[in-house]
Image (cartoon, rainbow, N blue to C red; front, side, top):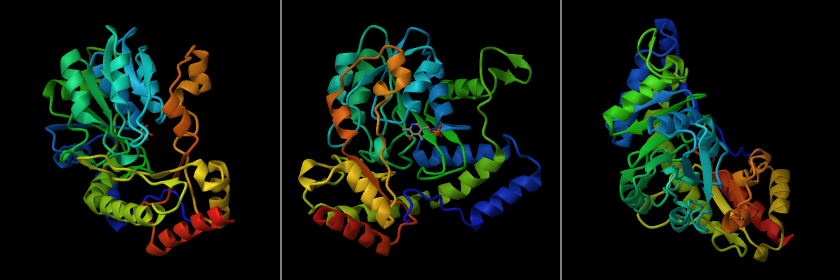
Length: 364
Ligand SMILES: *Cc1c(COP(=O)(O)O)cnc(C)c1O
């Protein structure tokens, strides 16, 4: 089976983890500090604050921007559940906006329609590794005084007009094993705002600046030095990982772009896509349903992913809360998408096999 994701862990990761263990500093310590510094430098921001998951990063970012009960936060529904749930953690209300058919990212026009006097923030997700419309979103942010919390959990190193994502609003990254770089569990916040960065550090550690003195409600969202050790080695490799993802994606698009009924990913202008996922749409012209294609690919040994089969607003959790919104593009594309393996462990022979398999399924 060609897996849909595979973390690449080498001797560099092992060496740094052993170093962390031998140092006896195994909770948050000097390696976390070093990882924060290097990650901030990579993204091109002043500050980075490490946490123990991407979900924690989103929660901390919202709190640091003062999102409180009763506030509204505009989010896409075509994303991982954590994007919206982080808003619920603040007892605020996620308001769902539709997505763009080509990029799968939040639809700026729909964001504008959904702004009310209660809107405190918007969370664009750079889905599959492609930056959202940051220019337009930052304009809205300035005009309406709305915070931009970037869900960059799938887009380490992606850029908009040459500037890396996570450097526009506040960036929230995840280092879960399937992501472009991994630490096991882990996350990172990125910002140019010293005040926000310090607030994030306080919230991460039980609302405390000075040990055993607590100024506000916080959490234990700290990263360990063991995880940071993995992250330091992975960050070194990230540019090469991303380059290989892009090469794999370009090859697949060149071959699959000619197959009727397969819509290959479209990179919008001024964007660097880092292909966390290589996601095609299967349309009626293909002659087989999306779910048939998935079953047949899996039978042949090609791993696939459906990100995401059920939009958040249609999840039981949200239906129970009374959500009853209609998002036509979201509700259509969730039935069309298939992600195919394009991660750095995918070999040229795997790529030709994926292409061949998809063509065979169409012609069967
Ligand atoms: C992975 C992911 C998250 C959550 O990250 P965790 O580290 O798993 O908590 C949030 N949003 C998106 C879009 C993700 O892909």
